[in-house]
Length: 210
Image 1 (cartoon, rainbow, N blue to C red):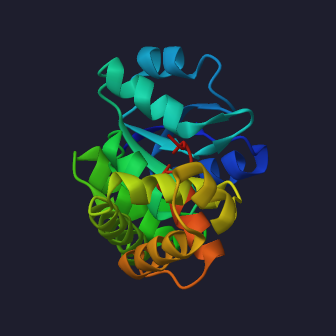
Image 2 (spheres, helix red, strand yellow):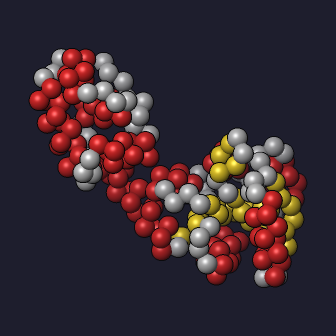
Image 3 (cartoon, one colour):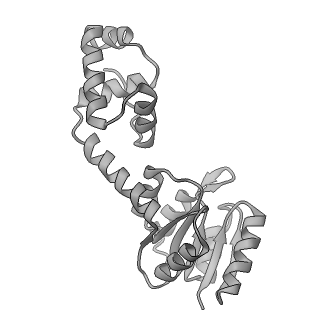
């Protein structure tokens, strides 16, 4: 029997999870729909596993993960979410999540993740493992970009044209186009919308012209 605390902003989801977990022989010691009071409840109830959605009303489950790590709470956390994004997987794992399960996964995958987390082990399903690997690959590739390339990506994401970027950086529009084409080859993206999505995933949108 594993003691579990549920954090999800959909009541019907919590009710369904409670029924499923109890059928597996586990005990649900508490639940929350947002972050208000959740840390204190986890500290008091000391569940073995916290089952956490990342998308909560007005906040992110990553905030809870961060606070749990700062307070060194002993509960292991399994993320259960619809967010199939490489960067979200990477961030959750970096903040100490023991598992990351997509809501479209089978119940057996969730059961395996909970069991692993309860014993201090990490569990990622095949799809999530692929997302984590994708995030790592993107991070490695981004590290090869020069400061100028980072700068130009930030400006492209903000919707600036090659002419405008060239004017701000004292470069010809043709040179800017060359930079952009080279970056896209490095990052293995084939159009500007894909470049924008990758930049947002990897938090490159704050680059400013100098």
